[in-house]
Length: 183
Image (cartoon, rainbow, N blue to C red; front, top):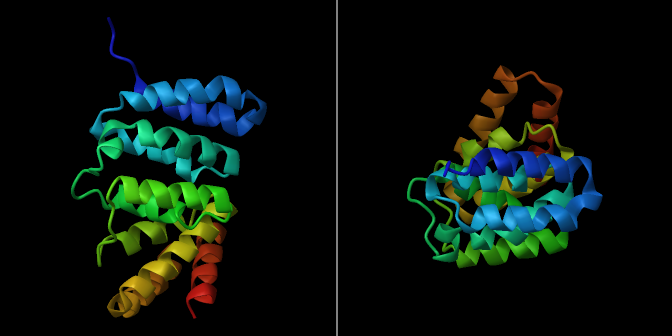
């Protein structure tokens, strides 16, 4: 038969959940099923649910992510700074249950925070269309600089450069959040 368009299906289901939260019980089994056979190259499509504005969508993604084979086996693909950044961001979700689930997932997949690479990824998420994600990105960025204090000058420079080159309101709000939390 035809290969299942897992990435597209996950994107569609996360959108359905965002628009119609009442469909959670119908959608979650499909999200789980798609994640259970997700090839490592499509990991980012499952992680995108962690960047949704709705806490219930992020919760659904966190519920299904342990079924992704590479996560369940405790091996994130090497060089996946974007995946690590999204998981680290999820560990700083304002919703305690989501943050706890993400922290457990962080342990399960054996993730570790590299001293470089993740900050620029987190700064990208400071410009999210969703306020909740901007807040989590700001918290995650501050926590990352606390883990790696030697990077704070570089992170500050990245924030200043981003502020200068990306004039969008959401980006500037995210940068202000990060500066406020990290100071």
